[in-house]
Amino acid sequence: MSIKMNDIDNTKLEEAMQVYMKDQDKENLIKLVYAIQETKLFVPAMAVQKKGGFQPYIIKNSQGDLYMPAFTSMQKFPQTQRYQGMLKIQYKQCVSMLLDHPTLVQGIALNPFSDNLLLKSQMLELSRQVERSAKEQPKAYSVKTEDFRMIVRHNVEFHLIPEKLFAGKLEFIKSLSEDTLCELYRTPYIEVGQEKAYPYTSDSFEMMELSIREDLSLIQILAPSKYLYQTNCRELYVVWNPLTEQVGYYVVEKGLESEDIPYHLDIIREDGTSEKLEEAPAEGSVMNRVMELFGGES
Image (cartoon, rainbow, N blue to C red; front, top):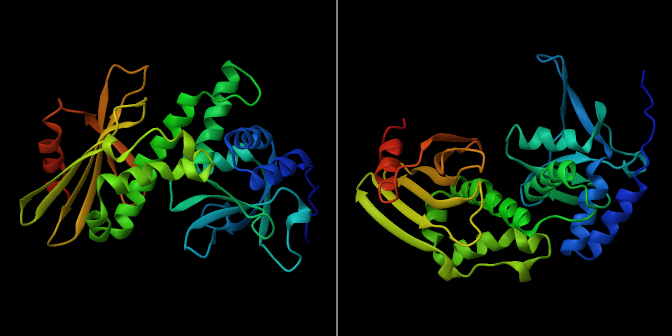
């Protein structure tokens, strides 16, 4: 027996989607963020017997990236497509599923068989930031420039760079330079049509590569000091064993304004999870501590 679900009226969201897909500038991005904020979506799901619940389906695009499909209305389902189950849930819950439980899923594919609008992690983080800001200053279509810069930089340092590192390993390490780093940081600005607002050049980055011994090498990256906000990174460390090709990724993250700790030393693992290990040592001592931590891993 099948249960017929009432359709959702997402007319305003669908209109905002069409405007944004034609012109991906910042104003249309913010309008899209606000249009989707309080909506519900249809999310295909399958039963999970062990947990007694449902989990969303995952789809893969031609580049091999994984996304969670979601639909704005029943009309957006292809008639030939069949799913085991369907969830009607708030967009905010979709964001929480992906941001609070990091996996290899890159984001949400909105109406994948028609519009196929990809809401990547930068967009989801921006949505969450807007939701928090709205509780304090509910101004329509306004996001502080510093919030935008903070979010996109955080996603590069905690998601984009480690994803490429663990996928490419030594090949990615060999490609690293001030120029390639500059382009990586530029990527989210391009994705939301804000390339002209990108504030850095290759001179904003400093790199130093050290071959410590035959089984230990390290690259220290001094990230831009300009627009360094909370949760952004002052330093990045890529460390690897040339003999086994084991790689590690550590960062010095600026603490929250509400914290007493100015900087944390974090590890970002291959599965996408991150952990604040300890208060970051004084500048000049971080490199030795990173080597100790990496050397202690199995």
